[in-house]
Image (cartoon, rainbow, N blue to C red; front, side, top):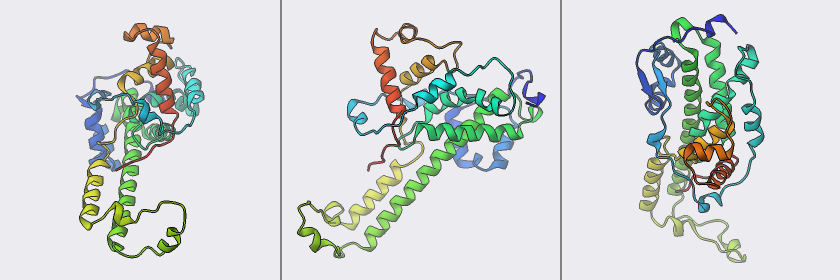
Length: 283
């Protein structure tokens, strides 16, 4: 690892809240030249997600989710030694706990946790490739910008793709509104119940209303995070992300003032949510 990575932490020139940075990424910092100019300002990135008002899912929400296990991955990276100054691929591996922890805050509806981690890792690698301490300042602050930028761009690109799919759907419904379904006679003889499209979207006005609803709801800043702030803190404590050591469930309950026995339930639910497939966008 170049010596320029190991520099004395210097005073930053101001601060920026992570949610303001997210807006900047979508509106202007998606362009590399503008992002690099912004990084030269060396602002401290404040990872405050409290404004999201994160809430825990109820049992009804959980019933619609599938499974994809991530516990092995989290256990593996929680045992990475952070005390050594490593180089190359080992240096990237050493930063995976930071990415895993940040990713907890971006498990948005329709997004897979491991995909978020992967994109955050891509951002870290990009940042490492062009890092210069004299230009960009403290690496610990600098790397968070790259990790979050790549995650935000990934999620927003998925949002745009989903919107385009819906737009094509509504366009098709307008163009074919009122036309006979070529399979209607065949379906009438089957035992399955068949609803004509006009039963679901009976007028062109209803199609327009549903499309406007889609435009409002499918937006980066409207997507809810599937983990609550309490669940995220329990996960960080359990796996030791950003902490001096890993804590047991009992220690977590004491530290966070959680009732005895409730800590394990919170952890299990959070882990289940992390291990679910992408989920669905429903209008």
